[in-house]
Image (cartoon, rainbow, N blue to C red; front, side, top):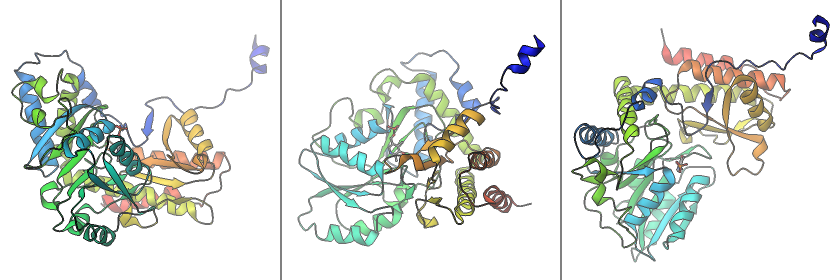
Length: 399
Ligand SMILES: *Cc1c(COP(=O)(O)O)cnc(C)c1O
C-alpha cells in the first residue's frame, strides 16, 4: 500500500481553494450582500413593496447618471438596449454616425444597420473619437441627415475611453442626438447626462452595477421624438412612467434582480459615487503600472498608449503567450482573465477587468498571480510589475 502510493505521480499543484475570481469585463464580481438580497420569494407584482422598490431604484439610477429625464428598464443585456435604443430613436433610412474605437462600436453599428438604418462608421483606430474630426464631419452634413451620433464611453474590447463632454461640444448646434453606450463604464466612471448634454444613455446590470446579468436600461431626456422603428415591447415611453411593477418591464418584472440592484446601489451610495470612481482610477493605475514594468524590453504592452484615453474599468493588453497564461491562472489559481476580443492574434492578448466590486487585495492578487504565471511558464516579462502596482496602491491610499 505504502509502496503504491509512492509510485503515484505527485498531483499538479493547484492553489485554488476559496472563491474563484473573475477578472473579465462582465459579468463582474457580485458582492455577497447583493446575492443575499436576491434570496427571497417574489412578492406581489401588481403593487406594494415591489412597486415602491422599483420606483426607488429607478430614481437612484437617474441620480447616479446625473439625469433629470427618464429611465426605461428592460429584461435583457447590453445587446437588448442596443436594439431598444435603435428602435426608439430611428426611422427606416435615417442616418447614424458611429465613431468606432473597437469591437463594441463596430458591433453596435452592425445591429443598427441590420434594423434598416443607414450607418456611417468613423474609424478612430485604437483611439478615442477626435472631437475635431466629429465637428468636421457634422459641418459637412448641410442637409441635417445625421439623426444621431452613437458612441461608446468605453469600448470594452480595446479599452479606449471617449471624452463624452468634448464630443458633445463638437456636435455644437447640429441637431444630431448624442447616444452613449456606458455599459462598461456606468458605476465605474463619472456620467453627467444633463451637464454633458447626453440625450440617450445605455447601461446594463452586470458590469459596474455589480448585479447579475438580466437588466438593461435606457436613460433619455424629455422631448425626443420617437422614430417609426419603435415596437410595443421596446417602446421606452410605456416603461418609464408606470403604475404597476410589471409595466416598468413590459411584462413580468425581474423581481429578485430588482432587490439585488437595490442593494448594489446602496453599496455605491455608501462608498459615494466619487469614492467609487476614485477607487476605479486607483486600481486602473495599479494595473497600468504593472503592465508598464512587465513591458520593459519585452513585447508586452497595453493597447492604449495614452493613459488619458484608457478605460478605468478594463485594460486590454498585448501579451505574447496570453492564452497559456489565462489557462494557467484559471486552472492553477482560480483566477479568470478576459480574452482578447477580435484580435488578430487572440492567443497573444488578454484583458484584465477592474470593474465594479473590486478591492485593492483582489487587484494586487490578480496582478501577482499573473506575474507568478509568467514566471512559471517562462513568458518573457520585465521585473517589478507587482511591486509597481503595490507602490501605486500605497500612494493612492496614503497613510
Ligand atoms: C458588455 C458590453 C456590451 C454588450 O453587453 P451584453 O450584456 O454582453 O449584451 C455592449 N457595449 C459595451 C461597451 C459593453 O461593454
